Image 1 (tube, rainbow, N blue to C red):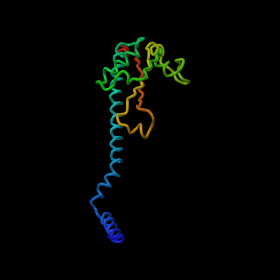
Image 2 (image 1 turned 60 degrees about the vertical axis):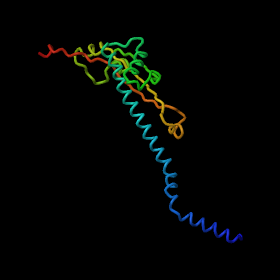
Image 3 (image 1 turned 180 degrees about the horizontal axis):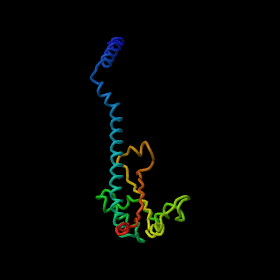
Image 4 (image 1 turned 90 degrees about the vertical axis):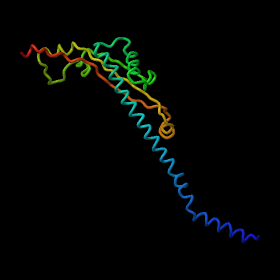
Length: 184
């Protein structure tokens, strides 16, 4: 067999391979699959974040409801809130997922909104309401929850962090009760 015949057979086989449609779908799949896989990972991560935020919202509200009923936040409030969030999250959040709990006590809602607890210029109080409002304490509670990503995609393309965080802020306070006998 001469070199010319061998070359012509190779070129003929090469042209036949390029015109053959049997490998097209495999090549298209090889190009499309990474994009589809990345989109799936992104959807899974957004679902994980949304679930964590909603479960955390419910757990924080339920954990703080006990303190609202009791009317005070004690010295161990931060640890109690952390344990309450873990208990009310249906096992989805652990105490280690609650990265920070901060409780700030204020004398009243007025002291929370205005440093020093005074009204702004031009605002007049009705008689007796300033004293009544200042007798009810208020607390500002900040809870930061962090949860690990469940797919490797965020670590590969976004950041070096392995978790995301979400911050909840709540104010626990009591409004003065309006006596029904005053108006009648």
